[in-house]
Image 1 (cartoon, rainbow, N blue to C red):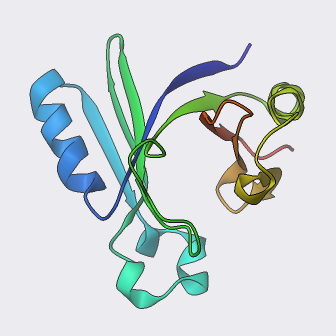
Image 2: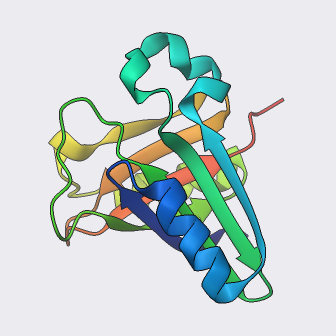
Length: 138
């Protein structure tokens, strides 16, 4: 069964904010910069210090985050908090298909295999953003 946790989007403040949250809650924080991923060659150098994925875990605290990297969408109040769903490809596929009914077409990133694993994003018919992540299928 997949799990879901809060997913926060920042505009070039992800590392700073997540480090602050770690000081508040404690726990283990991992930060992955764009420059440390295979996607770096597809993005401008000025974005290479941005965080592609941050994860803070301490007991019941489990928060994921990223810096805003979408080339055409802009962060505005209300679209910077989402729900992060982790699971297997098969689990994610069914949930993604169900949530995408009535979803905003312009905000739909189909579920697909990326260099880091499974990824997908959508804003459902109620305007709630969902990010999907899973291991690459074997």
